Length: 109
Image (cartoon, rainbow, N blue to C red; front, side):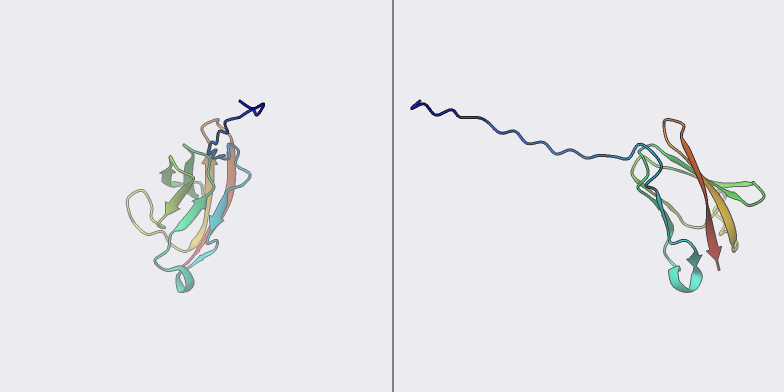
């Protein structure tokens, strides 16, 4: 072996997924018809298996987005498929550990 030692190098690809809700991005917010027509509201950098629930300001549930990936899109419709009106909508995002974050999305038609 001539006194030389050989070592094998190993490589691995590691993907880190956020398990908490501190890095979530929601865009565009506000959503404006004159600028964003044809584009959904995107909830991005979600932990896997998160749930996004959307409500009116008066607390009526309008839509639930379940996601297995790091992103969910809301096409500005309710659970019946009808387009929502201009206004402020509340969201509650829950990860698979039961942690929650709340916020607002504004829709301007």
